[in-house]
Image (cartoon, rainbow, N blue to C red; front, top):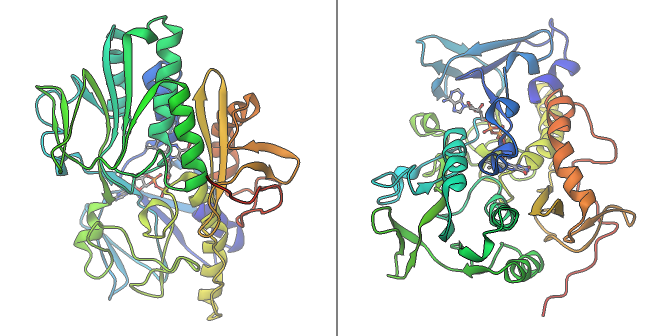
Length: 399
Ligand SMILES: Cc1cc2nc3c(=O)[nH]c(=O)nc-3n(C[C@H](O)[C@H](O)[C@H](O)COP(=O)(O)OP(=O)(O)OC[C@H]3O[C@@H](n4cnc5c(N)ncnc54)[C@H](O)[C@@H]3O)c2cc1C
């Protein structure tokens, strides 16, 4: 998206643009949520990368080994290097399941799964299809994670899935989170906790998982609490890309890149900008955020290259459809200052916020089309801008 937008602004004589990625499989990650329920398959959510790039953008397929931020060079795993005037770090977040005791030990991919990878989501599809009774536990090991709402969506869809298979009464669903509620922000948290209760999904909060025991079938927290399971769906801890740790001065202890939350310039060097899950900015790690950041980031690269002051305007805007099962979904919209509220989006007339509707479900399904045809090519979506709209939102009041 960033490369495509920059290409549109600069001619080939003005700027050489190179995209580096380690593979040629661009995965539409929101689709992973639907795979375990047989609603989509990996071949429907993966496309080659070259097809997403406009003419005049070079594509280099190689892993990044490290970045030399003093000499302005990206060192590639194939032994070559690329010099840059401006570097955009867009290498996302990775799962670090090995950081949790027992998680990848006995039982991993047999009764302990994650749907955050294509392999995990496919294995979970088979496990769910074979499941006929017992305790299913959904556990977020630690924050931050990509799309913090996806585990709740999984719980809601599991309720729908087992209902459809006429076996919901034989399955106990439990949602186990390190947070003090169903979600991070008070209004949404209260609303979503109510929905879990309505759907008879047990909520266990402030549970910091220290160990996953795939033999005995139990999660054990650091403070000694236990949650038993027959099948666990775990969202492992996340970190930034490993090469960030090998690039002196670039990242923090989790390999995320310290980034100015308003300009999206890295704190390491003025000619390094950061977008998406790779940043440490205090908003969700979500595709919508990445999209909204893109507007500000590209403008600021243009300012930087001519020596102008950067615009400190990114507001942390995040926007997410929350699939709730039975062909319905909620929508949430928030930023650094404003928590997800009820009302409508983007104005007083529009999609309902924090309220289940079929329209939101259609929005969620249509989003994949927008992703490939609007977001990645760097086109604007009419009526949806980088700044969070305030019209239509109901001010917060939580009992
Ligand atoms: C299950 C799930 C559901 C989700 N649902 C939603 C949703 O409904 N709505 C939403 O807005 N967001 C959702 N997200 C989050 C969304 O997918 C991410 O926030 C988004 O993809 C982030 O984009 P990114 O470009 O920062 O990182 P990514 O899309 O992860 O891209 C990072 C790229 O960097 C490359 N890379 C990494 N390391 C190296 C290296 N060393 N060398 C070369 N290349 C490297 C990778 O190959 C990858 O192509 C979901 C995520 C998951 C996992």
